[in-house]
Image (tube, rainbow, N blue to C red; front, side, top):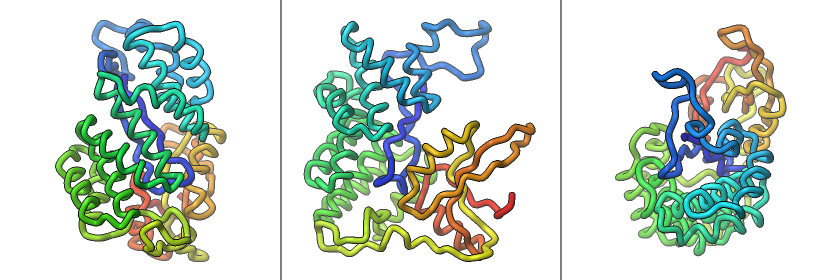
Length: 297
């Protein structure tokens, strides 16, 4: 089935793209059902798949970690992968590493690649850029399409932090060649190739000595007309979880809104901008499916 990999928490929130993936050998199913009418549990995949895909990471981790030891082969790797990704989404990096490191040697390039990509991002969060670059480069060679492009992009960012501009450019070009459907991802890759720096990790100097802007550099305009919405969720708890990922960019606001079908949703919004152009510039830095909306909408 198709799941969303939420690999960017606080330190990587500005890059949040929602890394979609599937585990090879497991069925990809439509959320709207199929022609035969309805789906069996086998069609839908194991319970932890459903929990992970709906953002219930704590429950997904509990289920996947509980059964992984009793499974074998691809089923075992699949459960371990979900356990590791869920742990990372919960900011439990030691647990994530415990589940994912053994999978980096998997014969399945999808499993190995996703594991290496997540571990690379953990290393990047820890400013261990040399190890991150190696892990993410490996992931980029195993993953295809937008997944491989993201791994190559972040490998390039790690090389850039090390001052290895030629290696960074090589990985950005690889990312460009792999990118397929995600237009926001393509924009980020083009920006990197043009010399636009990655989103700031913090206000201190990077390991390469390049000063990055402070993470609170987002414009805050009193009485602004526009804001950037990064998502809208069915419960306040889900909205708060998403807001925590973007806290380094300012103070996310959770605003109740009404959907077109009359349901109450909880929107996570960032910033207050005088013009739509200013808001759009900030939205491009965030990436993902963020969009500019009028304040008060």
